[in-house]
Amino acid sequence: MSTAITGSCLCGAIRYTIEAPVRELRACHCTQCQKASGAGGSVNAVVASSAFRIAQGTPKRYRSRADSGRILNRYFCGDCGSPIYSQRETTPETVVVRAGTFDNAGEMKVTGNIWTRSARPWSHIDPSSAQHPGQP
Ligand SMILES: [Zn+2]
Ligand SMILES: [Zn+2]
Image (tube, rainbow, N blue to C red):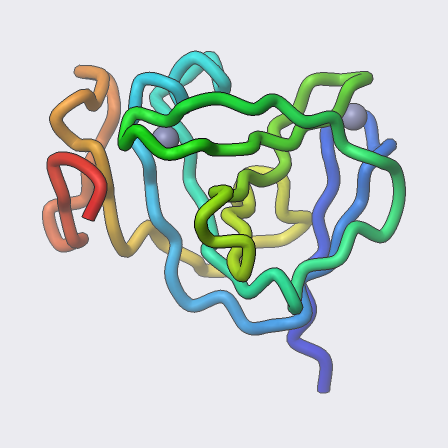
């Protein structure tokens, strides 16, 4: 039985596969995710790089210093602008995939929130989820 998750950008030029179960979703309320998403931040699955595969297309990369001070590479579709995933230079063994690009997220819920101190007033934070004011 395959537990693979598939996803794509808005226009479909980029497609990917996650060959591992995703049990936790983490919402990031940092100011950079707000700018990158044009919304309240991002909701992500942290997965092993070895389980993540780009199946189609080549994402563009935007390299910046994150609110944590670390260098973060953000990968997105150069045609439609969808953020796809990000990766810290210090932790190449994991990728942080934008859950909003999943083809199907089933019953997944946000289980943790980070950078809550910069959360926008309109963002709902589930009180039963884990919360960190900054980078845990
Ligand atoms: Zn696209
Ligand atoms: Zn963020």
